[in-house]
Length: 165
Image (cartoon, rainbow, N blue to C red; front, side):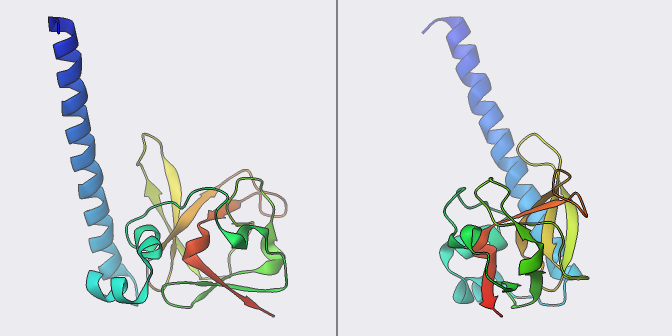
């Protein structure tokens, strides 16, 4: 290995360590804030006991499910979409649309059902969507949705449960 390859490998290792540390601290800060800000507060153990591992990863650790894996993406029946963490109604079926992204998408939440925060992970700035009651991470909102709002709430299916009308 020549000197240049050694320096490049060292830079990659240092960058990876820094990014891992940054993302870990960011998640801890968000979760600490969430426990102070939202009505429903549970310990990590309590959340793990009521959520599946995938639900916990998305709702409590701000993960993202793989696109196209949620059966809720293709449901268009009348009903209400609730937060998986606390059963709060979040979206109604009349605001759901097919965005083609592979995640359930809505153009408007139920009034007061969500909170937002700035998400600067993955080297970009996005608006993160949380349940206003438990602080669970739902997904992100983008400004490329349909009328009348022009918003696209791109929501992880594991963050939702569908209750037919």
